[in-house]
Length: 242
Image 1 (cartoon, rainbow, N blue to C red):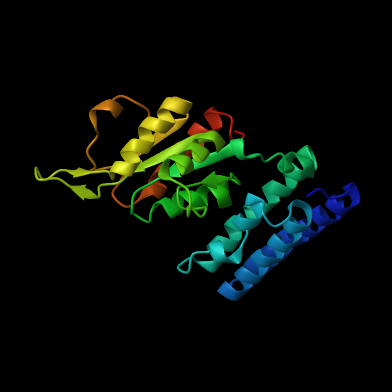
Image 2: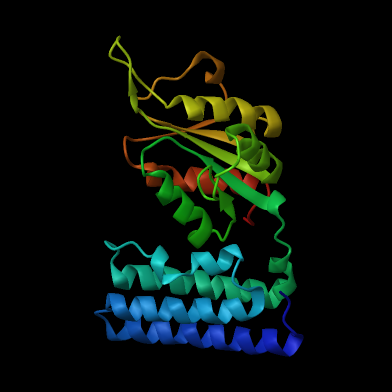
């Protein structure tokens, strides 16, 4: 979907007003979850006028992406900051820049059963505006595991493989799920170790082939502790600006 120059300028002006509206809420204090969700829904609605329903930016601004336990004031302040930066990018690069979003720009997230991968997904999509993929994101009925993985390999330009301590062995050691171990080999083989980064939870055993390879470690259950390291890696590889 492509908007005219006038339509794009109108939407940018409206998005600036949303930044001002957020700052007004924050100045008054005691931001409510309802205000936060209504504000985010409004931003999403105006972005949809430029990019259409399927663009990753639209999903990132969905009120449904807001965690139920989030502090509304802090969340609104962070989203307003991100929106202000985004509007500046629209002014500088033009709205068409963000239409150049083919599948080859996706970041793949490999993970086991631990739900912490969703925190990484939110960080990539909401905070960094990056498109992402993971094995179960699309319907796999009628597709073999090989076909789905082949599709993800073809569409990904970068991968984070989250190794969490889930499988308990008889020697009392904890290991990552075998599907993640398999994906590490596939994506590092396709993209190389600089662009297929292992996120290793402390307490999870390394397997021989990854010793010495690119890793970012994080405390048990706290993948958010690795976000700044993740941001720096993405800057290094040119997926986001410094």
